[in-house]
Amino acid sequence: MKTLFVNPPSFEGFDGGAGSRYQARREVRSFWYPTWLAQAAALVPGSRLVDAPPDGLSIEQVAPLAKDYELVIVHTSTPSFVNNARFAARLKDENPAVKIGMVGAHVAVLPEESMAVARAVDWMAVGEFEFICRDVAAGTPLDEVPGIIYRSGSTIAYTPKRPILHEMDSLPSVLDVYKRDLTIENYFNGYLNHPYVSIYTGRGCRSKCTFCLWPQTIGGHVYRVRSVDNVEAEMTRAKQLFPQVREWFFDDDTLTDDLPRVEEIARRMGRLGLTWSCNAKAIVPRKTLEIMKENGLRLLLVGYESGNQQILNNIKKGVRLDIARRFSQDCRELGIKIHGTFIVGLPGETPETIQETIRFACEMDPETIQVSLAAPYPGTFLFRQAQEQGWLRIPDDGLVDEHGVQAAALEYPHLSSAVIYESLDEFYRRFYFRPRKMISLFGGMLRDPNVMKRRLREGAEFFKFLRERKTAQTEAAGAGTTAATV
Image 1 (tube, one colour):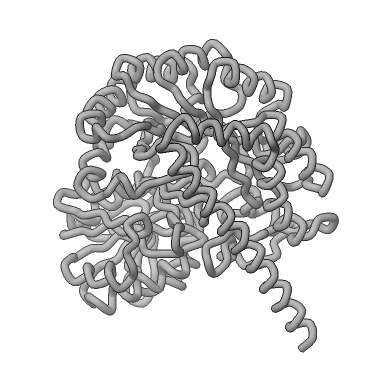
Image 2 (cartoon, one colour):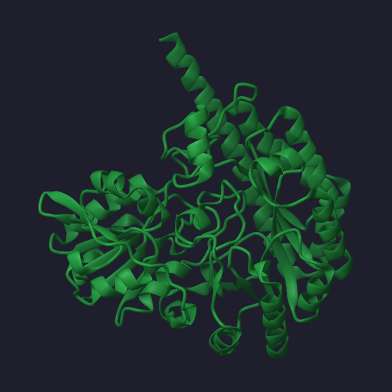
């Protein structure tokens, strides 16, 4: 079947979750590669991938494409699902004969509820979806495709569960799809050199963090990996296809889960002369860090989450603060940059622990930070815990507001959602407006004109983001007062 893969239009600056690390608008414009969709597209000859958000494409520009295809496969996420369901209906309006599939974590964990809402969708993948997409596109009858829920007349039905993929080398490279369908210069984030390209070398994460979406829904807790030879061959070709790329990012949930493997990958990257970065847990030993740094590693994306040990225990982070401090010191001494991520509003949070985490972030002093509000995605332990404890204060699809900005989804008897929401602004201001940090950032701008241009743009986006959050908070408070008065 002639097949179109789509990451649909959404909020301005909102990746929409097509393989992205974070499914909301960020304080600085961020677009992650639709790697999962590209992986599926690589299995379907003659297919096309449209990634609407980074290309700035509207529904009016994308929906008419349905007239030229027999099958359209749409990636969705919890925050964008309602909009994506409407988009699917629009595709059917454009071409009533087109078959529509939907993939992503949201439909994988809530398949029946999703089919009830997205009535224009013919089938949804329940789990990993690359080979499902291949089978459907090849014309296999839906009732013979393992791992889906589908419409059968006026009812819906399931097919047998599809085993998870272990032979990761059987997946084709995403590079040809990237080269053919994507404009890599349109992909940004606030901490990687631009332009950058991200790929996966494996899937799954051994950690049991209660809030983390992918390992609890599609990826699983077994780290399934491509061979090092396979990774080296892909990166050798990537260097040839994209000579303008300044940084390569390995988007595995935790590349450093397998220390001997990451050390060998580092050595191969060193031979290729590539600058690269990856996700890491704050427990990597110094010896491994040294090998990575010596072979082109520039930055680690590290999920610190909290500066309170009890909260880390509550979310099953598997990290001790003393180990995280030693790891951070090792990175500083070795010259490895860190982009640190933190979360406010996790179970056990109090006004005092929020202040503790802010102080901890300043002590760790990563190059840049991302602060998120605790987000209970369906399919995670945190979501079930929030339901059982009565912590959810918004609908399941209310993780972002109408502008794609993250909402404070949790509220505790001792900590209001308003305090959690307000703490994000305070966190950013106290971290970035320290004299030491401002001098550091300004020095980097003076040393590199590209950094100067980028930081000025990001600074403007950052302050605009904070203003919009404040406006949204004021409007919400006003609406609440009006409702109470009525």
